[in-house]
Image (cartoon, rainbow, N blue to C red; front, side, top):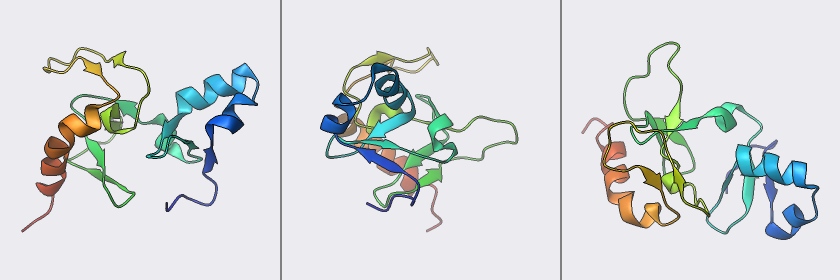
Length: 123
């Protein structure tokens, strides 16, 4: 993976050895990669919030892309459905059909997300 030099990757066994306060911090501010390790970003990516109507999406090439114009002062959002969550969680009701993020959302919505990313590029 092309992580930043200051990003940290934690295996489940490393996480188990940490005190509960650090386990909680990792659970809140990191994301799970495709092999089940937690990635703690050093940059502002850890402050990107979930939205079912996100303005950014991650690509298969390990970078984020804005899928619409983002206005000054607007928060950056991602759909956490593709971040390999281990437990379902209920998002804020945004008037969308989806109300809950599930661990298998990536397999269920990848075509939708791929289409949103594809629509950004001029053909």
